[in-house]
Length: 253
Image 1 (cartoon, rainbow, N blue to C red):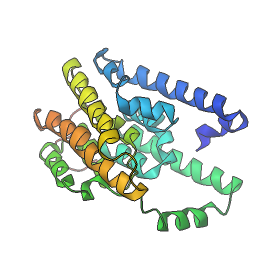
Image 2: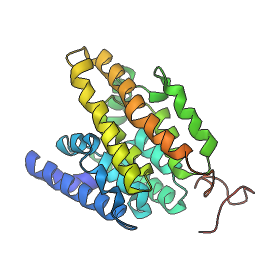
Image 3: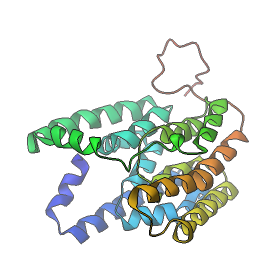
Image 4: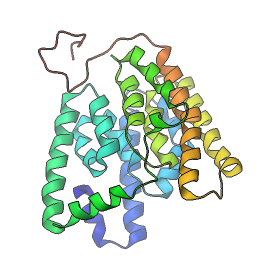
């Protein structure tokens, strides 16, 4: 991704630290715009795992709240696309589109052969699967009852894209909290699910490990987030990708 290119010239540990610091700062700025309640996502296992691995989920979570940052979503088009489509901000959708174009052009200039290698890697990526396809994943379809809300669409779309069984993928789900109590509960419950990995699936082969971790993520991250959203009324803006002439429930900005 273009945003990561400046870090490529640094030693690995410095580049990772700088990327994590910037991602964390952006996320903190994004979630504290209207208060401090969502800060409880930082002690969650999802954030800690993401920070230790220098993963994209913190900055992706920030992008869901900061439309101008949407260009970074092109770095992982599966998860990034879900986040962009879930938003009711057209600015985020446009920013993400610009990121895709920029990433494609720059990456082809730097490494013209990457599409071939990428397709070959995908054909052998048995560790990738959509959470909704796992046992019990159908529960996320309940978010359709709140389809007007961007947080309901976020949960549903994230569950529909292929991804690894890594716990950092659950971080964007913690954004559905509206209150301090909801943030505390989602952070704590999702962290309990992560702790269970050591007692239930630790030491299993990779494919089986990812399958079991995905099941735990459904039970301790997707399901709690869904319950939180179902307690709210079905109201909000139409998705950003709906045509402007759509006669649906888009609210005034």
